[in-house]
Length: 394
Image (cartoon, rainbow, N blue to C red; front, side, top):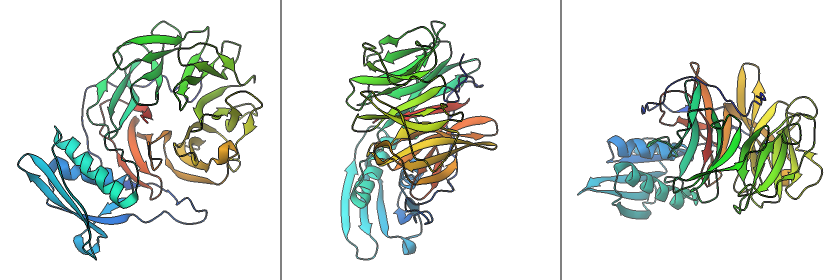
């Protein structure tokens, strides 16, 4: 087995469903303007909500930069509650009393109703695409083996997707959030499989050696991956069915974690060509690989390009662990870098505001959500065992 940090093949634990709520915290985030401190959270008050509804609203709002405060300190007030089996919610500006909306929600579950209300608040105040009903995939260690799970973006309603009984890794969504690619040792070799929405699974990269780190192009017709079929682990691009493999890098050192620019023209990845891992970019149609200007940061792995194209999140290995960083993308040329907080495995939300990532707590890996602008963090609901390598469906 090739020991690439991005694979993180072995963990410990079991996979019994256990929902846990964790307190909010704040990462050492900074605003995207160089030299400024983190952006201030937007104060908002909640009135009339209890139980699951209140909990969901607080979680959803925190990860897009709101802070729930008393009514006298709030810029916005959300009032309502459950009446006659439906959730009612009204959003009002506190000072001028302008009503932005007054809606009723009749979704099947209390959580779903609360997510929809939070989505409407976000759309009305921040003009952001909603994420309340999006999903994530992630790896869960089950002792010596591991399986892929899918869940709501906040970790609730987790369902085991695979039953491979082996080592699995690197889940990634195809556009539309229906099909999922991942790596599995189920056939005694690290191969890439596509798990379709109908439950059917097909191997799409089973070359000799390593096949891993699949990442699907924005148009869904191709995927990038790390293959070692030509000797060392290099970046390749294949048709979505595994056809027509084209080699993009030809170094003697390890490459890892390719990801696509939103326009589908450029791929960012990590390479050890100069010794320590650094970020590089290459044209998806071929050509020379170019170093991404990331302020000289070394030990940089696990890049993920934001859907709006502006930023690349990545992991930096530091003394005692790992930290999440972002760099201005500039088409793959790079730019200013910000160190956000301890963690690894960053994956962008569809609206390019929030990151889901892995952090280590008391020897266990847990999933957490980070609002990049304010640095606010809320841990996702967890299942027992170690959870890692989250991928956010877009």
